[in-house]
Length: 187
Image (tube, rainbow, N blue to C red; front, side, top):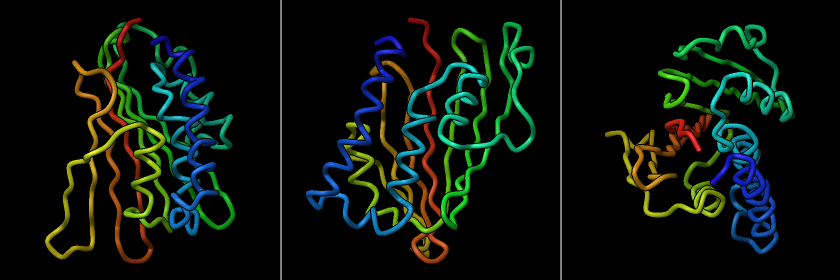
């Protein structure tokens, strides 16, 4: 599916979750920063940008500011990508951090894109993520002391190694991150 078509689908995902929120399906996630985290994720990482400048454009559109200056087209020129991008957005009292690593060839590179914040109940957010991303049955992981958890879903092309992962801390400050790792594929 072309990226521009995928963008239209992605834009519908968050409103669907917000509709479900009205029906009570995402109510617990709305009591914290969970839906905001998912919304910012959908506007940036979930769009699977192939270049750092594209992610920067999406991030700025979502209200993020680059922490170390803007990415310029000359930084992503050449056959290989090897670039880190950092941005932050403050909403109410919560800071949302976005970082991404672009590596490999421009035509088949790997991107790891993460958004994180505090004040999210990860277990309550999981159903909203599954509805928005159309994924189910994640692999689960918990720390020995039960303080940390992780859910990992296979996502994207069936022949790829794309995945979506949520890592979360159960107690305060309830730090949670959403990470999408995907392979850039030529259309």
